[in-house]
Length: 483
Length: 91
Image 1 (tube, rainbow over the protein chains, first blue to last red):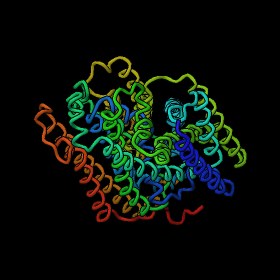
Image 2 (image 1 turned 45 degrees about the horizontal axis):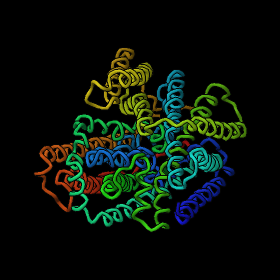
Image 3 (image 1 turned 120 degrees about the horizontal axis):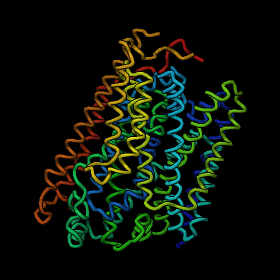
Image 4 (image 1 turned 90 degrees about the vertical axis):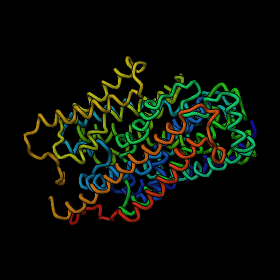
């Protein structure tokens, strides 16, 4: 392993630490610990909001699994990845100002706070907190595996040592810095990713002798690689389109996304974030996946698809630049992990403990408990990630799908349909999660679309029907302050 | 506390949400139409633009540029700034 690459990577990690420490001053001086630690006091500006959103959408699926799959599947997988462009504008437009206004009125710090105020139901709260802990925990484990694999392939350290380095870096600054640190580092990381993918794509195209040359190499290897149907011609239009729900419009239901949609400081910040976010998401998705496929003629026969990115970066770039560019996928994983860790921790501390166990807990106690739970969760994930499951992208997507099936309708219809009520929300969550597990386990071979589509449909139907049956006309929308 | 100001802010928010849905539908149709409209033939017969197969160029590259431009135009000209706070509800 080239030491110059290592030095660049380490310099990047140090920069991240500095940001974490700097942010921790806000946490120390803040009077409302929960609002600051889990939400950065709703002070995010447009640029930071766009970047933290992008980093959240991106996640390891695109940065590790994604390019690897593009490497195997060809342009069809880049087409699939471009379904994520919609997230750049759709999420903030649809949740939009209504969500931001209501979240402030309810003083909501988490998605669950919002649902609690909207539906006024203990069962909605407990069910939501439970789904968040269960699904985000598995997503987080997948991300840790990805992060450790990346360090392993770059440094040549053992997997366990790599996992340890990764885990300690993540924990230290999440615990000290909270949401503000995560959002700020997302920004640094987003910028690195944005320029990193541009540089790497250009270098890869140059190394491959131009786009036309690369395309004809791919044609020679397997003509299917340049079609929209995948290497074995088995990516059907229905299957690829269903990713519009899974990684596209469906992400409005993800807790890690909604929490960001309540963290910006003004409508102006939101407008900027929509524009910047759309451009950044598009550039990163397109470039990342094109890099994956263009790597194939240059470096044929890579066995472990997770290492496509690190290998191609070291192949086509000078070492110091490769180090900085490799910080990009590393950055993506770290920021995803950080935000997931905070969310699981907030579900336990804020949604369960403060709501039901000890509502009168003093600020100091909540603070200690938050830091303690965040650390404990980190250590637990570390232990799980020691025995890594294969195919990290699918594990990760499983968690995405489960959360989307659970939350999309309670959030979206909760905002826009005044007759939606708690019975509808509970029915929708239970239907969504259970049908997802059933469809994914037993019918995923039989259907032509991604398993997430059916549960999202079923949970819509149950939300609407149950809400209609259980309300007699009267409006349930709680637009008053929840004092 | 449901006020006229609320209704105004919420109707702005509703309109903007509909823009989001409209853009997403257009984006999907463009993406799907070019990808499977132009890509559904023998790869030997593909036409290429700037090195990319035409289906990919229009669906993913032009599609991205188009959507980004539309988003900029819509946000600049049709989105309204509103206060996110409730007046007289400072804590």
